[in-house]
Structures are given as C-alpha cells and as structure tokens.
Length: 355
Length: 255
Image 1 (cartoon, rainbow over the protein chains, first blue to last red):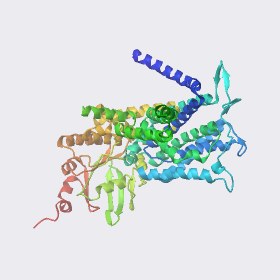
Image 2: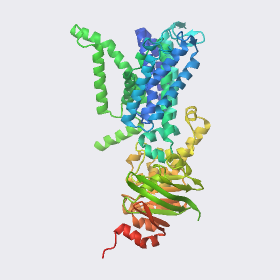
Image 3: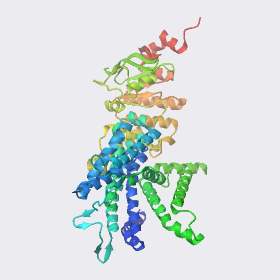
Image 4: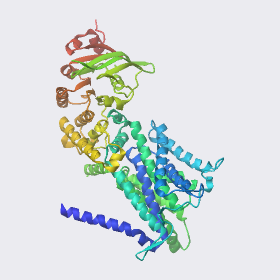
C-alpha cells in the first residue's frame, strides 16, 4: 500500500506546484495566456455547474449562459459607477449566486414536466429571453444600459489590494491576471469539492436516479419536483459566481457576451469531457478553451510560413477543426473522453465481450 | 387481523374506457393479498392509482390509519407503500447497491448543505444508508452483485434488486406487479420463498400475478378484477370455484 500511496501524494504535490507556477510561466510567454487560463477556469466553473443539471440530473439545458449573465450583471450593477454602488466582493458574489439560483428555480418551475428535446427548446428560449432583457432594460428606467453595456466595473479587491494592478512580492511580479488566476483557482477548488461531495450524497443519487428513470425515482419516494428544482438552482448558482468573476475581470459587460453560442460551447465541454464525471468535465472545459486559443495563435503564422499568404481565415479553420473533433469524439467515445466511472466500466466490459 | 389498507370505490376512466369501476377492497395486516384477472382487467391501473402514479377520478384509500394523498407517489412511498413494476424499472447505469441506496431517500434527510459540509450527521447517515443497502442485498440474495450495474444483472436478479429497492423505503405494504412474469420454474419457486419470507418478517404483500398456480398457493386472500370491476374476493379455494371467476377467465360455459 505504501508504494502506491507515496507516488500519489507526490503526484498531488507536483500538480499543486505546477498549478501555482503556471501563471508565472505563462506571463513570460505573454500576459494574454494568463487571461486565457483565467477564462478557461471560468469555463470549468460553468461546465461543472451545467454538469449538475445535464450530467447528473439528465435535464438538457441550452440556456445555461443566462445564469452566467445574471451573475455578471449583478456584479456590474452593484460595483460600478452606473448606479454609483460599490459593494465588496464578499457581498456581491453571494448575491449573484443567489439571484442566479432564483433564476434557475424560475426556469425550472414551469419546465418540470418537460424532458429531452422539449426541455431543451424551452431552456434555449429562456437563455434568449434573459439576453434580450439585458439588451432592452435601458428604458424607461436605465437598468442595464442596453446594448452599450456597463463599463468601468470595479475590479476584484481584497482590502487595499486591487486586482488590476501589478504587485511585487519577493522579487516576483504578480500582474493583475496572475492575481485573478489565484483567486479563481481557490474558487475552483471550492466548486470541485462541492461537486464531488454532492455527487456522492443522497441528493446526488436522487439526481442520477431521475436521469435514469423518473417514474421509478418517484415510486422510490423521491420528490422529483423539488429535486429537479434543486438541480437547476445549484447548477445556476455556479453560473452566477462565474459571471461575477467574469464581470470583475473584464471590467465591462454587455449582452453580446451571453449569446446562445456560449451555452452550446459549455454544453459541448460537458458532453465532450464526459457527462457526470467531474474530472472529465474539467478536461473537456480545458480542452475546448485552450485548443481554439492555441489555434488562433498558430494557424496564421503556420499558413504564412507554408504558403506565404493566408489561405483560410483562422476563425474558420478553428471552427472546422473544432467540429471535426466533436464528431470524432461522438463516433469513437460516445460517453465522452473521460466518462463517469460506471460508464467506463461498461465500455471495458463491452470491449471484453468483443475481444 | 386488523385492516391495513382499505380502498373505497376507486374509479378511473381513460377517455371512453372505464378502467376501474367502484373497486373496493381491504387488505389485512401481514397477509399476502392477490389481485388477479384477465389481461386488461385493470390490475395495473389499480396499482398505479394506489401508488400515486395516476390520479384517481373518484374514491379514497385509507392506509394505516390515514387517508392517502393519491396522485403524489413520493407521499405514498413515505406513508409506507412500496412497489415494483411489471416491466422492471431499475436505474440501469447505477450499481445494484446504489439502486437500493436510492430507496433509502425517503427515510433519510441530509440535504445539500449537509453534503457540502460533510457534517457528522450526514456522514453517519450516509454510512447507515450504505449498511442498510448491503443488508437488503444480502436479504434478497444478490449481495455478490452489489458493485455491478443494475442493467447487467440477470432477469431474476433484477427482479430481486427491484424488491430490495422497494424494501429500502421501509414499507408496511409491498406491492408487487407481476413479479413472476417471464421467470422459469426455478426462479418462480425462489421468488415464492422470498415473498413468504417477507410475510414471515411481518410485511403485508399485495401481489398482482398472472401465474394462477403461484397466486393460489401463496395468497391468503384473492380479489378478481374483470373489466375494471371486482367480481370476487375471498380465500383462494372459494375464488377458484366462483362461477363468475371461471366465466371471466374461460368465457361462458359452452353447451
């Protein structure tokens, strides 16, 4: 046993050290990469939240970005010159999570009887409604400032430390994005623990039971209405936290950031990574946030070097590769790259049967 | 013996079909009560009304001293009625053990915050759920399949698992919908033993069954449904000789 335990402990330490050192290394390459890493963490947040709804409870939600928007606008309105309110993060983030939670329940309540495609259509509509609201709530009372969005949003700050500026500690420069990275990492740790614990709990089992067979779940004594609402609300609250951090990091929010495309992207992360498995979802989110950025920086120079001029727009090629990758995953690993352990066990058995 | 369940004038209509017409029956404590009838007689409909999956049109069910709130399955389960399904309904991608653990849901109460904070009471409850689920798997005789996915179990084992999940809700009345359907003679005999064991352990059993031999051998009392109406209710020996029952099963006697 010791032989197995020791390397594992060592591996964990290495991962922690690597995660802590990552932004410092990335800063050397370019601050843009730290920003990309931060966005990737936000996407992990979002996909873990959506994983509760889609992966565990099996409720197909295509409007998840709406909760992201709720969180982002909560921060934007409570910490910007727009209303002249400047609340600290430890008040805004919980409020954002709570409002997103309520929005989740509001979406959940009328859709309880719907499943599969029908639920997807309604949630898709909900996502659009929220975005259009943000777009139009500028008159008669200017709440969201409409399509112009809200600018000069306060950044995250703890005491006197402002997360926009660079601090120097022990001779190392900690830039704004680097500091955000550490905060996000901390929040991420919290979200992962919450996810893992929920998964292995009475509530998590009830979610999976509803996904597997709703009628049997009811007969087994599960109040499916409440448990489904809980899934929507819990999933949404993660979206709300992610939204708040997004607003703080960008310093600017507008309805443009919360389009259907984003919802689909988050869903793709969950599905590609492996529905229901926390680590799979994280892998999916990392892959789908980094690979496109990587392509963005490499495709153009590569083409210039090969052909001397630009043949295909990077954006087009990016989406092409993206699409092919998704199709291939669905063909060869339909349960995702890193599926829930029970699915994996199944795949293993299927292979044995074949071989 | 005292009455555990009294259904009064249950009626249910699907469009133009009167699936149940004024069905009244009483189940006594610790008896095995059989509900039989030809195909389409309304047995499963009665089951679904009783366990809250269908809303009834008229009628009332009194159970263990209270009036059941029909139309709300989780409340029926909480009141102490557990059921299995004619076409087995398990949580296929959960392990056998997890299936039974889900059955404990209604008797436990840890919520989101308990789970996130891993409070002492939550961990204790979780351990108790685990222990109880293992016990029940052992009780129905499939402890060795605890870690397997429910959908990989054999047909007979799936039936047993469904019963274990139902037992996990701590029912006073266990309602089995055609548990012997599709079983061979050996499996049926084992099932019979299991049901008798349940009764000996103090449970009341409501059994819908096609296998008349099983019903007649196992049940203390039997009710017969035909076209949504109860046409007989008595001990098996009497029901077997009832001309109305014979007519329902075989048609009017030929001359």
